[in-house]
Every structure is written in C-alpha cells, then in structure tokens.
Amino acid sequence: MLEIGTKAPEFSLPDQDGVMRSLSDWRGQKVVLYFYPKDMTSGCTSQACSFGDMYPQFREKGATVIGVSKDTVASHKRFQEKYGLPFTLLADPEMEVLAAYDVLVEGVTKTGRVSRKLIRSTYLINEEGMITRAFGKVKAKDNAKQMLDELE
Image (cartoon, rainbow, N blue to C red; front, side, top):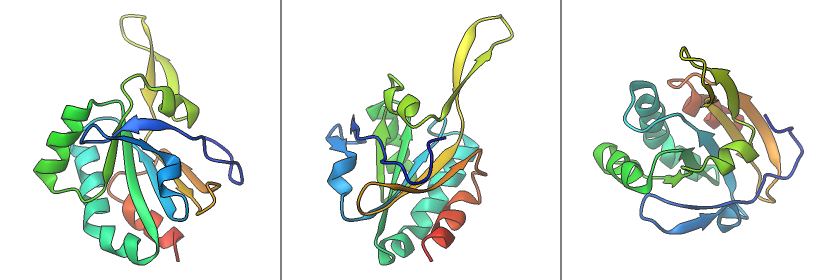
C-alpha cells in the first residue's frame, strides 16, 4: 500500500465507455479509488452494488467513486449496465496502475508459475490529489460503508 500523505500517482485509463480518464479529471473532489479483482464475481458485485447504492451519499459529501480492475472496457460496460452502477469503472488490463498503487502481490500457482494477484484495496484521495486513507485486504460487503464513514 502507498503511504498516507503521499501524492496519489497520476494515471490515464479507459473507462467503461472507452473514454480516457485521468486522476486529475477529478481534482477538486475527494476520490474513493477502489481496486477489485474481477467483474461479475460475487464479492466484486457485492462491493460495486454497495458503492452504487451509497453513491448519492458519497456525492453529498463531495466525493466520487472510481473502481479499477484488470478487466477490459467491454467487461466493465457489461458490469455497469447489468447492475446499474452510477460511477466510473476503469480498465487496467496491463496492470500498470494496479502496480503503481501497490495493490498487487506475487504468488506461486499450484503449477509453480509466478503470478501477480490483486489485493482488494481502497484509497481516499483528497481534493489536492493526496492520499489521506489507505486500506488493504478490505471486505467487499463492508467497504462502501467503511469509506463513507471515513468521509465524516
């Protein structure tokens, strides 16, 4: 995890509509930047739907929510449409932003191959682009409420 008080790494990634989005697009707002393993899986769907259900409350507190995974733009579009998600999903199939935000760990598969696995993590970034909170190994079903409480 990146340290609290450090500048959040800038990035440019395509959203669910294929539009390139950068962290600086949200300068002046608080950003809840959450990293999740895979669209359409039970934990990730629970997490995304919780953020979606609470999205008006995030907006009331001057924050936006952005989800990032290694899934494709097309996968994100299907995920967003199926569950009516009102926030931005960013596609990072090359895992460059996932690496920049230190949410990947290396592990060895049963076949002995080294792979990188995403740790479900969430950052709160302030209006100036600084990391004010960082949570690793978050619980999917509790993460949205946890982050909403952090905005109090």
